[in-house]
Length: 260
Ligand SMILES: NS(=O)(=O)c1ccc(C(=O)O)c(S(=O)(=O)NCCc2ccccc2)c1
Ligand SMILES: [Zn+2]
Image (tube, rainbow, N blue to C red; front, side, top):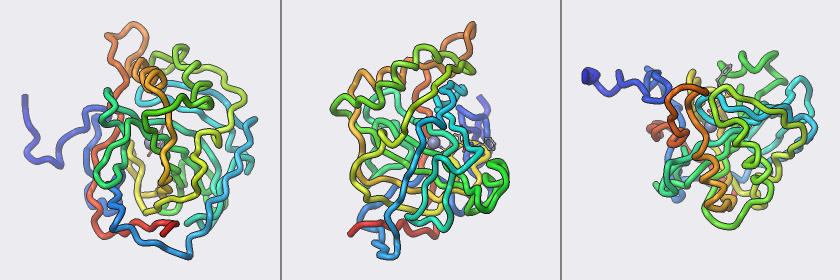
């Protein structure tokens, strides 16, 4: 097999896109070294208000499964925290591994969690569309929540029950009422840093807000994620696992914490 002349030319097996962005200075995900994070007393509590009726559908996009929301008005929003504006919820999705030893995109003190939830929001105060916000440094805000193996998660089970119906790429089902707040841990503490999308176009437009406390899910619920397929109906089946991007260099960035 031909090997790229250097690592930068390597293509990511999942996205056939460059692994690195030439000149990227704020790529994601990163390892969060707890002792290197800096408490910032200016950081406000994050205020989250989601309207469960804005939930539209759940679908398999061949890379993860995602629940999309009606973001045509300010009905499901976050404000405060490190953010200067309010941001509208567009979708949430997950990243997970083939086994419980890895799966999250971010790590804490080099520890992987078995999965990570991302709630994607965009700055509709400043930008007219999501597509434009994706290209701007303050365009997106993504809340990251780690999933750890433990007790059964009632709220997640509603999603898990829908997964068999979206086993194949590009399958979608109605999902009319779901409140993503039930997937958030009770502890308000978070880390925040300036980063990027972890999927193409990998644009450096994300203010990451990573919750310190994981939520607990049980083995059956993680296994349900792993029965999804990257492939369409009729294609040779490829299990949807290990859909996380490799860690990226911290470069000249500081991770701030909302807690001491
Ligand atoms: N891990 S992450 O939060 O960076 C992320 C992962 C997947 C997606 C997605 O497109 O599904 C997204 S997205 O919904 O923000 N879409 C980004 C790509 C995109 C740009 C412009 C129009 C449509 C999609 C974000
Ligand atoms: Zn993600």
